[in-house]
Image 1 (cartoon, one colour):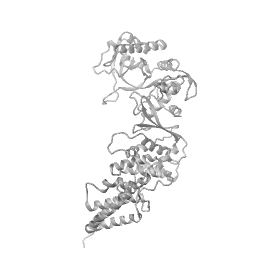
Image 2 (cartoon, one colour):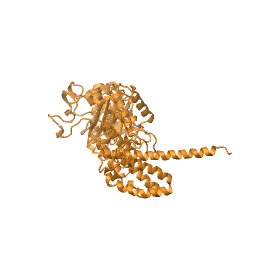
Image 3 (cartoon, helix red, strand yellow):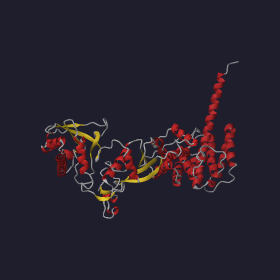
Image 4 (tube, helix red, strand yellow):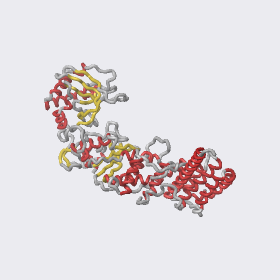
Length: 573
């Protein structure tokens, strides 16, 4: 299914290069005259200023070298093209590699009779490499190709046709006849995929194999390597180039927590969720939510165009598919609208909600400032809900609660994830707008206990100012799991603080006493223990109360400022 969808996407792509050609960084050109008698080594500059400039990107012949000696055609590294070994290289192997390269050029010249290839062959057979001036900073691991009389032989159609023919499965003797799992045709299949997937987290820097079997345990029916999943050469090249194109484009891929996601549609409909998932714009999110509420076709599931997403990671020398989503553009937009509606949560200062990117939500499960990647299961769960809908798992709630208890504080992103889990577990039908801010009508004991802890903390701070150890530092973990064991003590301990406030700050005393009484009326007894869902509700009650208190303080200051300003503007009698 995945490979079929990638092959279909490859048919839409332009600029994927000829068969068995791939985008390659060429660092050096050997400039030859039309007879191949004189040569000059020219250094090409690609990304100027970078520490490791590998040259100019162009399409060049490619093949996979897992072991042994296999020469590419007319474009390869310095050991193959010139016989100039790297430091520590085995001289015999370098000589053998160069001989294999020359033999490859000789065969191409004999088959095609191309003048440029013949000129390169004359240069090599006349020991032309020995006549070249070797730069002091020459890198034998970089790629080199030839330019003959101003033209690159690798760009010629006859050369390209030759390379496609000699590298085709069966003709090269490296495959066998079988039914291709992608197109269903019976014919030669590849022994090893000739294209590796680049940019896979945890994979190999040179590229990672999408299909392979390198141990006997993975083999069956006498099949080995890529033949355990028989793929014809054409399909293998198409899905490999398609996936590499997706991973090379910032608008179709997203890296997160040891995974890379690729997104695409069957038809070119101009939809990509990358921006909304990584750095959501408040205006775009608001438009998406408004359209969903009004039932506009831009947000609801009316667009039937197929949409796909795949999560990939490296596993040894192979690509591991961690998740696969097959839906429609309309359904993906509808689920994105729900995903952002689930996020809606007042900010710590009481201001309206803002959308979070995936990285911020994933970070809610990690220690603040940690550079260690989160488990890939966390972004996978969040992204699946964003694009495919469904509930967030309770283990995600457990991870966030564990992090909150360890830090003894609640971040906005953590409160947001808790809200998303709780509401998505309920089914999320019409409830996305609930639990966004303080709800005085919410009488669940767990929610009221969270509010109560926030008010008791506010009483302590108002009476004593900043202290080294607050009740949050000492009792948050116990209060959020076993309220009955601590709240009686905490309420009694708040009475001296209230007495002090009544004497010194009567306005603050009246406001805090009113909040305390309102919450306590709903708590005739304190729960002995709280379930994991109730612990999440406790955190939301605590967060909502603190945010509402912050909003009230800001409003009070604003009113005082306006009163002073209005008084200053009054004319003198």
